[in-house]
Length: 396
Image 1: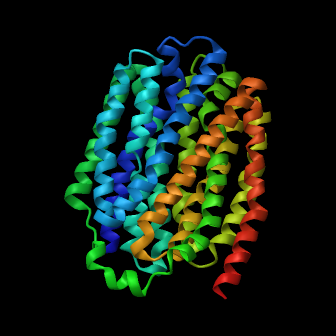
Image 2: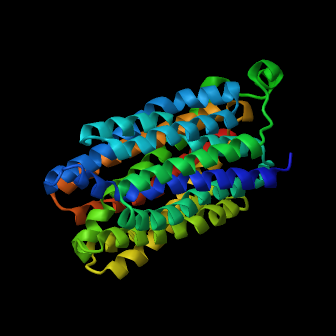
Image 3: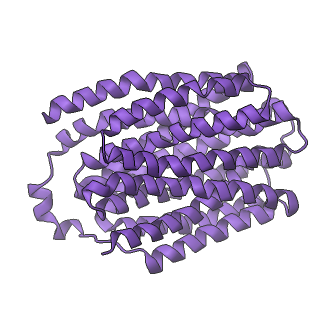
């Protein structure tokens, strides 16, 4: 198998899938208003509820999909996620009310997980010394997809409405599934054919979990930090720049932020192949936290956009760096399950972040959401050092 060629097609499928999803996600607060939720406090509540309920279902189902990936293959899980999203997401355009929208979000979260499946597939079909670059490259698909998705989504929503936006999202998910089916390859051995590897090369399950759980805890905290402010960016943009043009401005800032993620995933993943992922993650946590503070304090959309760009460059590198850490300490035959735990930890962090940020937004102000987000980023610095030190002792 040509791992570079396979990486390209997996990247392309993820790009289309995430472009579709991110064409819709930044504009959900405006769609909730269109569904008849006009009270400002109620809007905040339902924005947080939309983010939370999808993350809850994703958290519950991710370990299941991870175990099935180890049993039946990771490519099949990519197809499952893309086809499920292609069916469910367009139905949101026809939701008769906010409760139906939340129900569909729960269903979409249950079938989601293309990034986790893609990372597991690529990490098992890429040479060990290239895995940091490969996983970071897959993460760059998420951000490059978000660039195109957010930019085009704002235009489609303004010119053609939300129905066209949701249908476009479904079409892109379907196109991603076609690429996976016809062009993505996987070198996969079912467990019964790989029994020797399971018996000889894998640590006992308890030892594996003992190595993995501290990194999973770090992934949860990263997810809290990443999700804490994300649902409220449209409201902050509207507060700073006014209601008129808020949709377009939100799309531009989301796109600009995603550009930072395009470069951070591959660049920091490449760096993690040459020095320890832990050290790179500590640097990223420091700058990501410091760049959160001006976002909550500024009254300028320009300052907001510049700080968001820098913040997303460093924050966007944290998740792939921790995934590289997991990939380098996890046997291939068990990686789907471990990455399933990672997806569950990540979505659990999203749930916690959504709930806490909703409380802050309702109790204080949207600006405080962005100021407080600096706390979990800075908290990661001593925690990463502690976990890395513990791993060094275990592997010495």
